[in-house]
Every structure is written in structure tokens, then in C-alpha cells.
Figure (cartoon, rainbow, N blue to C red):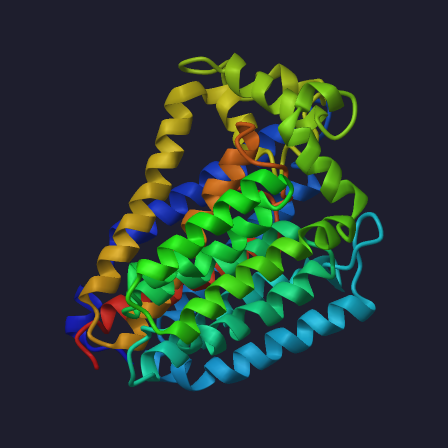
Length: 408
């Protein structure tokens, strides 16, 4: 339970910002699904309101759970998440043959959303309890394994965007745990090798520069070989991995590189999204007045492209407000992570802040045409019960841990 002093540390600003984003999201979903001839709210809005109410209750309840309880449950949550990710591949449902959701009565549950936070707890527990420094690549093998297992399972659904998010959680948590930046840089080398391998000249130059950097670096020879060999192997695997992506995933990447060429197929969303955002100008066209949305030019407007609806109707001012709220949340969480005495709690808060930052950045980047379409929702704003529930629950975790910041 929480004492009076801890209750005084309740972060009201964090809660207000979260609830403001949820309210804006519901308003945008209402606008995206608005039917002037309908006698009541659309089913999507009604469902999002119900989930938001449940999520707020869940957020409030999670505050009461101690960080020691979460640390003890971390392996159980991780194991449960992996079981659910395997089960969804067998009995799950999807829109076009993929398997991403469980049907639970009138609602759908997406286990990958829960798995993101289960991975954060598992990583935080391992890194918090590790006594030796994380100063060699071999020390990163277990944290990498914790992340790679859900990454592979989610990739099988297939859900490329969410699978990449698991990998992106690792660097900030490792850095907060004390890993040297140069080691994190070497950790990214195989990823760069994979991207550059499609141009053999660029890849050879990259390997030459990497070899030179490793030669002059002060790390063990075994570690140098691990980094270099891993980079070569991942580069060689690039064509194989590309050929085993789903057709629509490859088309999304190609459409991102040349949207005009695919303007009537996979590039259509990107083009319409940029038109919607550009047409919003400074203050937008007004609530319910977006033409791209009203004439259904913009697909997935209430989920992946909710930011485009916001930009068209409220312009730069509305976008600035929403992005400011996200920035406030992320900065506030990182500051809270620096004040807690419990190492596990600090790592969990960093993981949650990183997930919120990366997912929102990727989603906004997609709507602006700065990233390939990933199918990733905008946290707290987009329509989606699983995402909203687990995000609100994660905010409750941050609130509870910040209120217990003086506990070891």
C-alpha cells in the first residue's frame, strides 16, 4: 500500500497529459467515423470509450502494485507473453490471412501489445540483477535472446513493424544499465550491414570501415571477431530475408522509396496522407471538415493514419499540441527514471518511455512519408483496444514506481 507521503508524489501532470491524448484520440476517431445521418455514435467510438474507461480503471489499479511484485512476476509475464504469441499463430485471426488477434467476445486482443511490456519487465529484471559490467558483446547475448524470441514470433504473424519495435527497446535499456556507447554502436553494425548489403559496393566499403574501426578499438580480439563475423553473416542473409517477406511488406518498402510509381496501389496511403497533412495548413479545416477523410480518400484513417486526420482538421497548431504532449510524457518519464532508487524500476520506466517515443515517432513518420507503412498505431490516439489498455496500464506502472521512488 501507499503511505501519505507517497500519495503526495502522485504525478498529476503525467495523468493530465495522458487523459488529454486519450480524449483527443476519441474525438479524432469520432471525426474519422462520423456519419451525419447516424442517430448515435459509431460502434468504433462506443468501443473506444468503453476500453478507455476500463483502461483508466486498470491504470489506477496498477498504481497500487509494488515494484517488487512486478520484478518477481517478470519471468511469469514473459513466459505468458511467449505462450500467447505462439498460440495466436495457431488459433489467431486477422484481416487478410495473418494471425495477430484473439477474438474475445465483442473485443479483440492483440498479444504482441502485451508482449512489448512483458519484454521490458524481463529485460529490466535481468539487467538490474546483473553484477558484472556490460562491457563486452558476449555479455549482451542473453538480453539479445530475450528480445529476439518475441521478435521472431511476431514476425511470423506477420507484423514487421511491431517486431522491429522489440529490437529498438534494447539499446536505450542497455545504455541506462551502463553499457558503453561504443559497444551499442557495434551492436548496430549488423543492422547497418543488412541494409547496405543490397548494394555490394556500399557493403564492401562499410565492411572495410568497420574492420578498421574494430582494429583500432580497445576491445578483446574475440569481441572484434564476433562483431565483424555477425555483420558479414547478416549482410549475406539480406537477400534471403527480403525474399521471405510477405508480398505486401516488400511492396510497402518499394512504395516508400518511390510512392508515385505505386500511387494506385501500395503508395496510395502515403500520397493521400501527405495531401491531408499539407491541406491542413496552420489551423486546419475545422473539426469534422476534413475532405480527405469525408470522401474516404484516406484508408485506415481511424487507426494507423489518425494523425493525418488531426493534421487536416487542426493543422500545424493541433499537431504541435499533440506532439508536445507526447514529448512531455517521454521527457517526464525519463526524468522520473533518474529519480527512482530502485534499479529495476528505473529500467522499467526507461523501457516504457522508449516504447512510447519510438512507436509514436514511427507512426508520425509513416504519415509524413518518412518511413515505410508499418501498420503501427499511434499510442493513446489510434483506435485499438489492446494498444490503449496496455499503454494506460504501463502509465499506471510508471506512476506507481515514481511514487515509490525512495524505495530500494
